[in-house]
Image (cartoon, rainbow, N blue to C red):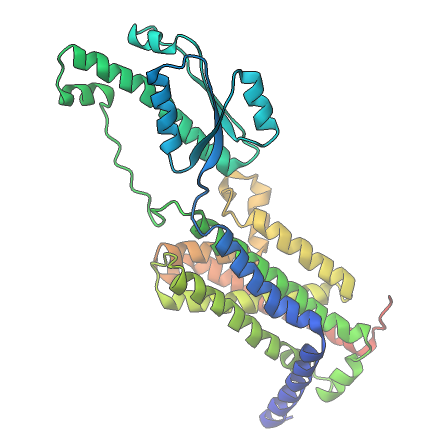
Length: 392
């Protein structure tokens, strides 16, 4: 076949595939509706960046102006809101267990007298780590309040002794912390999570749809027709089938990238070209990985099951929630087998931090390897299309 004939056959198969996409609702849901819903859901649910006004309780057995001032300061924090006063630690603990509050501050009787007489009274706080984010943020607030309590009393005592404000400040805080969070100065959880959760889910859809579209050719006994149009050329058949899906997934993926970087203003120090390249590689490598899995397991159910499992494990092995280098050495090696891992490393290196592309050469090479993986199983896919009979 000459080049013109090959292009015509590819376009014929692509038109056939467009008809199948139009007639089969599952394609519309999994390629357009669900991805858009996922994008809007995750970016909206974390729109504020951090959880705010999380409920906390107080057990104030001292009930003085000093302790009431501490409680008001705790309530003034952005992430904390005092919703209940309890008469005992047991009542507050039950409220935590019933998810009415995430934490509580315990101020025993005699706290103010102990502070003024320098007897170092104990102020306790309890927080639930069932939710890691809520527990960490409330731990920060409660620890700050505990520190402020002793500082406020110490300031009053030193003022009474005639010390100047500069002397008091030097004594209470001998080292001043100048904090500069790099890349995400707002500590915005939307920036931290959405840039990985959403691409991971989009890759899941690409895995599944790729395996499903090839597997249904066997299920509905249309594989012979496909190969006839392609003149038994499996490369032409695959290119024709994947072309419409590739264009749709690229539109969805680039739409997501435009939405988070242009509309939501997510930081991207690397500029537009690394973003465009990364989006293209993410879609193509995911499709090729789906083809590779189908070539290894030329069965609709088995290939989709393996794709689902691989996509779910990607969230753990990508390293965006727990660093890979802190995991077991075997897990660190296995993590390189997941496209999302390399997507994350390229994003972190070239898009988020703005380093040159060559700094992430290994991960670009890894995505390139995923793209060529189908070449190793293409004979098995051809054999399946020509000989295999679908077994329900």
